[in-house]
Length: 86
Image 1 (cartoon, rainbow, N blue to C red):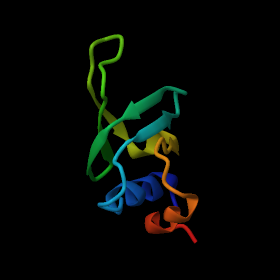
Image 2: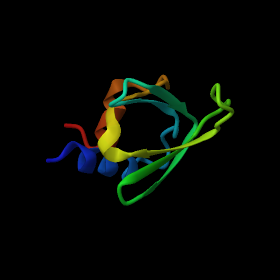
Image 3: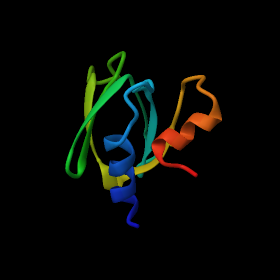
Image 4: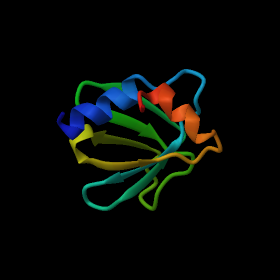
């Protein structure tokens, strides 16, 4: 499975009861923390809690540019099954 497709599926199937916040790491090694997100085919729209150094609060990232997703909440690891993990 292509990683861009896998990341898109993860965000599109995000459980409604799970916090929509976390941190993504991009292929340019930029960490982007977010408090909410929206998707369209191929692109992830992220909302930051605070603006970055260029005063940007919203960021559009290609799913193909995502290399990792970090979860900042305190939910138990067993809840990863709601994201499709076995």
